[in-house]
Image (cartoon, rainbow, N blue to C red; front, side, top):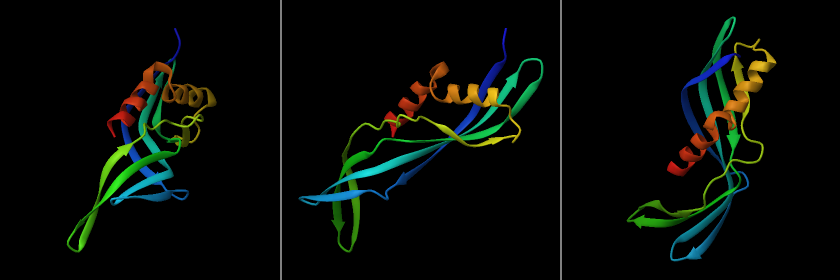
Length: 136
């Protein structure tokens, strides 16, 4: 029997990266936006038990492929807002997730490898990422 790993207390932070974003006015106050990407940061705690116990925390980061969406400009007197009309499904890029931080700093490479495999699809985590994106 090998080591047992657990990932717990997952929280997410979303950031829209728009440095390559383009907008196109389609008429009737509809704007098509494309070229941006969504960065998702997964904050989590981890533990490993075997002959010894190790635990810590980590942050894994992933980017979606370019996303596109349509929104409508809504004007109400002197104020304005946007109404989301449609979006295409978001997909993580081919690189998957990578660690931006893992603690403690002296985590062995084999632990990093297993934890990243878990975050990138082993044990069903890819299904969780897909579900989270579908709920956005």
